[in-house]
Image (cartoon, rainbow, N blue to C red; front, side, top):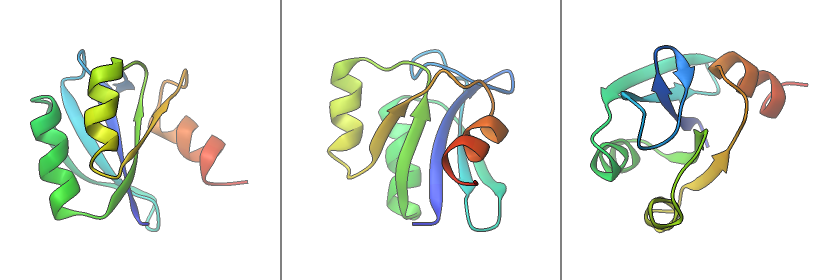
Length: 94
């Protein structure tokens, strides 16, 4: 389980609908792997199919979108943290 996803806008974690990009982050290498323009669920499906992603971090997401994402096998984590570094520190180091 190497890759996680972040919905981002202006360098900060944002809500699913407000995000301008989706960032694929490599947990093992502690670095962003790829970033694509957010086109909604289609953007996520592209990354989920190509990489073994298992978590999506976002500030907010509708129940409908959450259900669509989780149907792909990716768990949605709604967080109040603002940056990727904060999430990595909170969830993956310690």
